Length: 457
Ligand SMILES: *Cc1c(COP(=O)(O)O)cnc(C)c1O
Image (cartoon, rainbow, N blue to C red; front, side, top):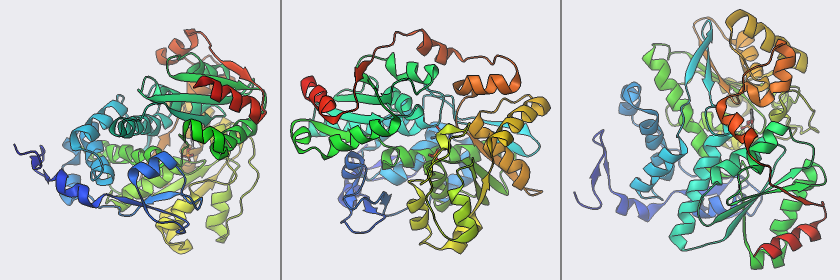
């Protein structure tokens, strides 16, 4: 077989050499800077004008792909979607191996009650959907580093709990990259803490004597410090990064394939428990690539800025409110600008495609309890918002799928108190809990942090 003409199993031909000539470009949602290539978008994370990067083309997938999707494995589906985004920038064999290594776990669709299904995204190493994006980004960054012969790239990430574990585990053992996880001392749960402090290898946990905002401020100052950037290669693994955000579309296609197998694919409604709206935006992009989705529901906790936007047409960021579904406690969702951009700021179209929903902590508690009592299914507080939104908003003839974004055991104290029992902790989580905590305590002053980082090189 010639080097630049390959035939995949489905009989589609690829000519990678030629495709390299016109790589996918990424533009900024603020449109004040020139377009960049994938590598720049991934390494920089945020555009120079502070906008978010978007792919210039969202390529519709061929009808033959959807006709045959129920016969494809998750890997095959994800490879097809990945090549629509990244196929012009990465050799096919490498992209296939990145996808395979990323998705070393399943995302099953599980029936919960009449016409309502859970898309379980918690079967990865840290039991939350962020594993998909973090694992993909780690491998993509690793590839760029190898290609350029770079070493010693340092990823800084501030976390209030879940992001740190997904990023640390995603980057664990990736050569050429060292990860520093900054977290507020005493303010993350024991289960969350053990997921990024017990790893060792190329992961360093920094326990900051301050709040999450202090951690985030340290990371921001580090990126702006000329001396530090002159001496160390620093990058961020923030969730707005295209390499974390786009791969989240893989499991929407996989969910569709599973529903097609059981003849439940028509009138499909995806309901997405949302905080920064990255997960929902990935679903909207899947729809634009041809995935037959009837509509979306954005489920929120009391932080209902998006719902208010749908109702009024005005977007008013608010200080975040603390709730039981704490990964969704976001008062100014970063991916909102991507949604506006996708639909050219057209409020009417946005309201046709997405409906909103908001519920308070009491509703979350009642939903976890009543769902368990009537179906036996244990929801986590985030999935509970999604399930409740479907119970209230699903129309007859529609099939509803809510994204179960984390395993309930990650919120064991909350769920145990609601269900009045001790829920089981999956073996994967127990392994973390048996590890030895290794962390370094630092103050919240930037000089101390900078001195520490410079001492590392
Ligand atoms: C991050 C997170 C969310 C919110 O996802 P976004 O993409 O930010 O909207 C929901 N649930 C869980 C468990 C999370 O960790």
